Image 1 (cartoon, one colour):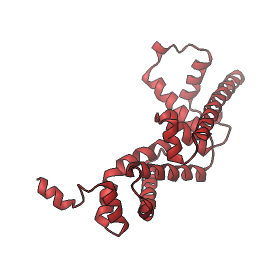
Image 2 (cartoon, helix red, strand yellow):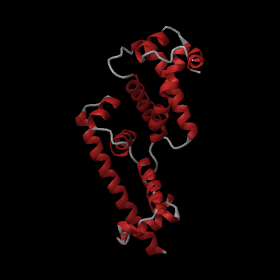
Image 3 (cartoon, rainbow, N blue to C red):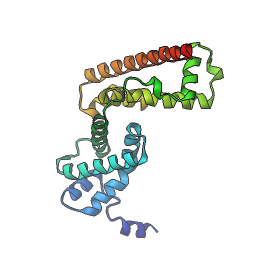
Image 4 (cartoon, rainbow, N blue to C red):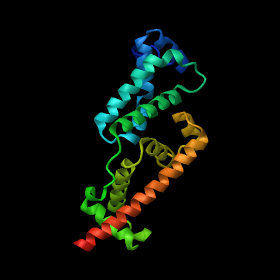
Length: 211
């Protein structure tokens, strides 16, 4: 069993650096092994930024295409997984930039359930012990809509820091920024999210008053 597996995957025991060197010299099986090892990680990263499965798949393909062309520059000073993750973050950030920001007038795009959830928050009746799974799901979907209103860079930082618990230092390495810039962006993004929620609450109250 073990022998058969090794015959099917001749580079299964190779180190990341060995795989990178082999793949950079045209060894397709070595690159296939890189994809096999790290595609789950790349899909997880892309899924944090993109909601549709087909967009995640396209992003992952772009990541490995870039990786293949840039492998000669990989010197093994850091982990191959981290190197690929940095490429993934930049690919996703470029996709978000190309898509642009959603319109400021988000209130009209709210579902009935989301409007109801906002109403509960505005009158402060939703005590922690009363929260339901359904309510959490509505809040999660609403948070995603609010994230769409942020600039791509701010959204990226917030997803990495608050959504995935990356440290400021880790995010700085992933994006290629200074730690100070990451801190400022994260602070600004949180402030913008709070302001967006306040606007939605006010808008929701206004619509109920008119109704």
